[in-house]
Length: 233
Image (cartoon, rainbow, N blue to C red; front, side, top):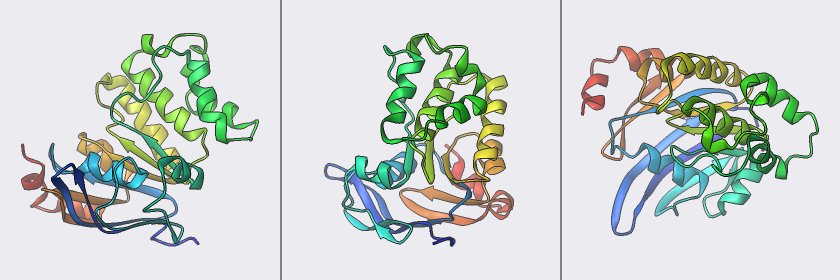
């Protein structure tokens, strides 16, 4: 099913404890290309990612992948269906080597060539295979987290702040890799760097207080005079 609703989120409500964070959020992600989730801190971006991947239960609404409902499935089953996830924090196993972190990503992948392809995307990791992940630079840890997620062979890759804490020179490298990935799979990116996010994305959604306040083609969202209002602290 190759349409513009490969990952489909409809009227999603979610939150923590008694606090509701998301209110009727709807978004569609095509089978390939980039989608940016924008908004100020506290707008609900990370909550949306956690709800899609199954780390938070839905209070209402639906989430489907390739027309298959996954709103009640545990995270592990969603990953097996093709959802990859790189969280904002604690994205690597710090005490394990780079090699062992990548081995975790291979647990559900029987493709013997997958590791070589990931090494071609992030060649720096090939020079660090025996190094503890916790001793890598911030940029290298982000690369490792993305590489491990790719080894699960995702159809949709969710990235929460992939350049947070990363040196500016490495941000450009990560951006270029994500642009290339978005040619083959769906990439959903939460990112504070507006220019980066809209370079990767074809479509954009702007959250404000847990609701979709603005959406559309990336360039149209960039040009909308209300965008800065929704991104201002």
